[in-house]
Length: 445
Image 1 (cartoon, one colour):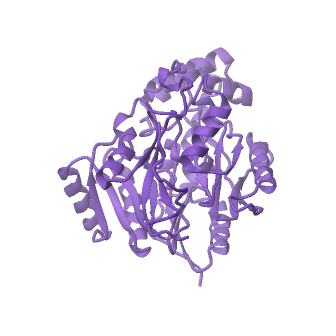
Image 2 (cartoon, one colour):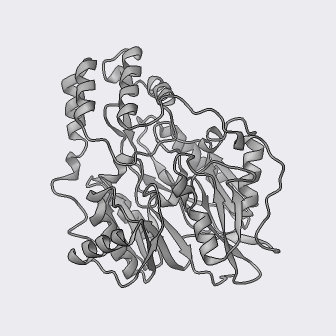
Image 3 (tube, helix red, strand yellow):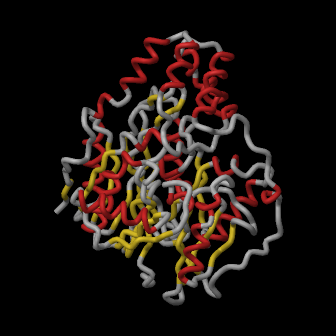
């Protein structure tokens, strides 16, 4: 029997329908008045750990092309001033960083971890654990983390929770217990990290087809987040397992949210990966990704222009070896055609076993803006499959019901577990972004 779990704690106080309202009101009140916009920007709290792969210059180009400054009643010159003010507020780069020497084309010297073929684990397989990083620097999200940890208890997996110290472990444990969340299934991991986005810097888990052996693939994350970037190394060394190195050899700058696989040799990622690796030919980037993951088929899709990350998990999700959700915008949305093209790409592609994909469209809510120029891309594909439970982001809007019904219809026998994402989405991600699954290392083949 399919169930959709309705939680009293899913939504924060007040209606989530009103979440975009303050910024909508600010747009109306300040339209055409750059000084008033800049004053509002300065007095608002910045979203924690805002994720973007774009500089202020790059976002300015996107917003100019999509007509955002016209909507705000600003000239392009005023729009540029506003974008730069917001980026300074968020401590983000104004211009694209110069290419790093590590991105120069290198000989193919990386050592693969197994003598025989291996494959990438998938979240729709049987999981034994899920990795999370406790939001000690994002305290208003502790209840949402508690809900996910509760869902993992229902799904009978270990919640492997990263903290930076024994004190942090004690504080997190006290909070969870005080608020009625289970803790007996938690395994605490004490290691320094820079952010909550463990999907992006965590390892891709690999499994030897000839044995029960496993290892990890390690891609290069942000240069400015070295503690995050070391996490796959920490995991591999702690467990004594091999690592495919794409961080120091055959380098690829990318994030886990922009890698989605079927477990059979198919991988999909977006063209944002190419822009993150300037100066390296696309064919070289493709080879470095597919060889690391032992992928025999790939589909590279265009990234939506308004999404700050360009990650495929923000607009598509592989449900099983031959079924995929692809988000769908109303025709008036800026990135409507991008999602149509992604769906068309899957309809003509084959999975790792050479079978066609079944493509199911999932509604994508309209984009709204915070700080006048930061697009908020609400997504339902940024979910997590955890054995008999599926954690789905919701926003307190009418399309939640449609999305949850589609999840229920496509996951018979599983509990659909909605968790409020109205706050975290304004930082550029949701529940898939802050988790990383660990499939059971028993070889399912």
